[in-house]
Image 1 (spheres, chains in turn blue, purple):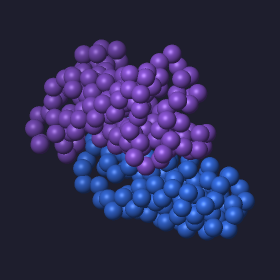
Image 2 (spheres, helix red, strand yellow; image 1 turned 180 degrees about the vertical axis):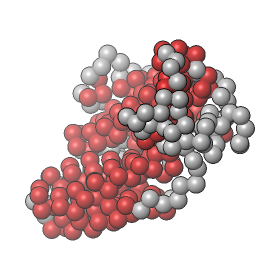
Image 3 (cartoon, chains in turn brown, yellow; image 1 turned 120 degrees about the vertical axis):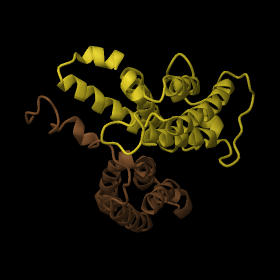
Length: 122
Length: 177
C-alpha cells in the first residue's frame, strides 16, 4: 500500500517537475507522459486484484533511468528522471501484501484447471 | 462475507454492495463534473471554475481536440460515467454468475473510460501547454474506478470459462449465467 502511494506521488511529481525545475522540450514531454502513466498504473495496482499493474510502473521506471541519455535531457532533468525512475522501479518490484483470494486470479483464465471436467492441459 | 454468493476460490464476493456502491458513487461524482464541463463547452455557463492554472481550463476545454466529435468531449465523458453507474447498479449480489454480460460490459466501459482520461491528461500539457483542474479530477476518478471494477469482471470471466469448459454454450452462459 505505502509503496503504491509513494509511486503515485512520484508520478504526480514527474508531471509537475518541468514546471518546478524549469526544463522544457523532450524532457518535459517525456516526463509528463511517463508521469501520468506511472501515477495511473500505480493507482490501479493499489487494488489487490489488479496488483499486476505494478509491472507497467516497473517498466516505466526502467525507461526513466535511461531516458535522459537516450533523448539528451539537460542535466537537471536527467538527474531527476534517473532518480525518480530508480525509485519507481524499485518500489514497483515489491509485490506487497495480497490478503484476498481470487479463484486463481487472471492466469486462471488461460491456464487449465485441475478440478475441471475436461481437464486436459492447454 | 463468506456466503453462497462468494465465487469459487474467492475470499469475498466482488458483486457485494459494499464493493459496488463506492464505484457507483465515484461514477456519479464523475458524471457531475463532466456534465458541468460539458455545459461550459455548450456555453450554458459562460465561465468555468479554475482555481490553479489561470487560463488552463479555458484553453483545454475550447481546444480543437475537444471538438473532434459531434458532441463536446466532456459530454461524451458524462455519458460514459452514466453508463458506468447504470451497469454498476444493475443486478443483485450474485450478478457475477447470474448476468455475466452486464458485469463484463461494466468492466469494458470502466477500462476504456480510464484509458481515454489518461490520454486526455497527457494531451493537455503536451499539445496545449495548459492544465485543467476539473479535467484532472475527472481523470483521477475514472482511474480510481478501474481496479475496484475489474475484480468483479474477473469473477464473471472465471465463471463463464468454467461453465464453457463443462460443455455449455458460451452464448447461453454470457446471457443467462
